[in-house]
Image (cartoon, rainbow, N blue to C red):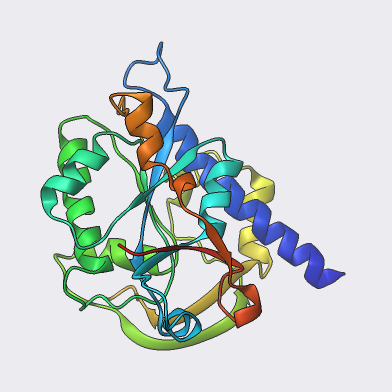
Length: 255
């Protein structure tokens, strides 16, 4: 029962985080107008070694874990997959049509040409320029995606170190001033107490980032047809849970 309660708390906390980015991303520059059809892009990544072994005869090249799509949907938004291996023009166009991006977790390597990291750097740099022009554009990184954010912010310098954390539940150690951050400024004291005092954050890491080492926009697709052509719901999901995959379901792509 204790494990069940812990898992429920973890799920609720993740949904709260997703709601924060959706609520920030869906509002427009002017407070009197709001985007009622927020769409969030999720960056794809090259197939993991495990998925390649599970689907050796198929032509899939990339994937998105379906759990990330479900989290976005639980906050009231829809999802567009963002492909890796494209030029900067592609990322510039897609970012001008959507309201935010999530860099998901996974096991992609940063040193693969035209892979997950190269795409993330393009997206990060474009979003940074948008924000400088007051065209506010949020990016949220989860697990490996957060590592990618720090990698992009450092100018593509891999400052991670090797570490070992597998299926480990930990509490958070908040830095001074955390209550003023965009992620936690609106969090209730109950949520902060849970995160600080209870082991509710799940950790699966091969690399760590040490101490040494979401706003508003008016982006939209030009037409409903263009929007529908980009949405992730054009692709089937595969039930990968029985294959000992890290994710219960995945969207698999030939791109």
